[in-house]
Length: 311
Image (cartoon, rainbow, N blue to C red; front, side):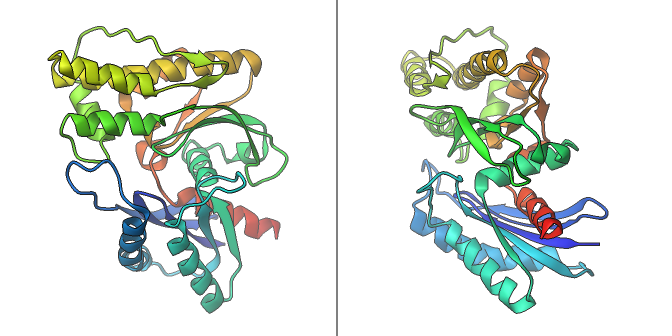
């Protein structure tokens, strides 16, 4: 039996997870960072402060009642694996992981936040076999909107971006429209609930440039609808439908180029019920449960277990 500890300190969530590779079960705890009403996000200095306050509390919570032994530690050290990818908030998790690794005398593994998202989704859908097999992973969140070709050359999700946003991320569009409607940031769940009150048929016309998308037009159109006096439920639905239509168009083009390639969706935006239902009806794809789509440390803990076995 091997147990690994995963830590993720992303821009809006502090996450800790213990993974038991024998039972394939996790102890997962997390807490959103506080954002003031009306604000569209957090300064990195504030995110670092809140992670510093929350991480010790969550580590204690995760270990309450845990009777095993930690054999390895994993941490998100950067948003993506791309060169130059960096955010100060991840240094909080890295510092804690380094201290725990030294104190417990166990190996420390570093992964990107994006790798963690993909691994968490694969864990939840029961397809960890895809970690070292070729597949396509969409990572759709407030910080990233990308389609990635996972090349299957190793067990740590080496990826090649094949499509991306050229302006706003999908989560940014949803959050900006949500704040415009007076919702609390991050706005995904509240915007979804509001959108479900609208039963009008909505058609949107997003544009693609090759495989890449542009989402700022969706924000501008929602502002226009607000100025025209359309009700909040309609605007909320329009924003979600705009993201949905964009992702559908991207997926169509990508699956034409990469037929018969498993398709996995990860990231906080992909926990939206409206988007998930439509995409599952149109495409042969995998979605994880919301708790494994939004920011969490489960994927980091799982990847650390795999790394420790291969070591």
